[in-house]
Image (cartoon, rainbow, N blue to C red; front, side, top):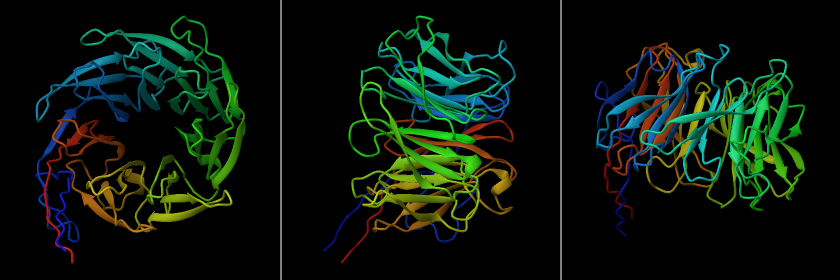
Length: 403
């Protein structure tokens, strides 16, 4: 039987070719676009893609690792879009502290995307709906005694229809639920509930309905204890939380995600650390425990990971970015791991060529179709050079003959 398959793949860059072992039967195209340079964002870190101005084109939001500055790049709407730099928060009135995390969501129910940032606490920048939007800052959470916020996530935790926030603070080892009581923007501090007080060095939190009961659960990466935990929401307007250890052996863990890796319809946990077996997925057993499976065994640990179907075959692949301290001298900082479709899956690594210095760090990687051509584009924030690059993908077709 002859089967014809069409696959959509990310484009490569004009300066290089795919390494040996990559998908040689597929045409890879296009060049890198430089979206931003100093002084727009110094050492860009957190990246988010969202349509901020309502023109149906995805824009790019970026925060600085070295200064409390937040900008967005307006998509010009072309097949190879131009980008206009616009400021959300200049940061002159802040203590010198970086923005460690950014999320975009409608926080006040006006159907406009707002920007929430971990910046000396948690700040909400309200979108006024103009073109381009103007932004009004609101403080959601101001921690005491210098206890900053390292991670945030947005979701309706208590099922009341309002978007709540979840956060983690390193000094107090606290994970918190910030309850949106419907009065967002009134200037009244948000009510805060503590989920955990023993979470050492949390670097990432992920909000997801992990067990399929329609309640929002929480995953946390705890670098200080090499631990990843699942906090299960037991439901109700004032939920309690049950903690389960996913793994306590992820040395240098700095990222955690949830996705269905093996295609069984159930959520799995993906973790990223700084040692061997640094990129792994964990499947939950019938007994409620977790079994780890390696995605990348000998490759250096990725700093940023995006689970996404890169090749359009219905399986979940992974795009990763590696920081300079973890990267071999000849290694590519950008890679994607191709899912082979089996259960359990195996993954093949493909290097993605780049045009940044060999010592540069891939601080954040996001995959999104920026120009509407149906192919994934790769947006990367680089530490050295303070640039954001875009690998534009072009749909490529191949036909596989299978007996």
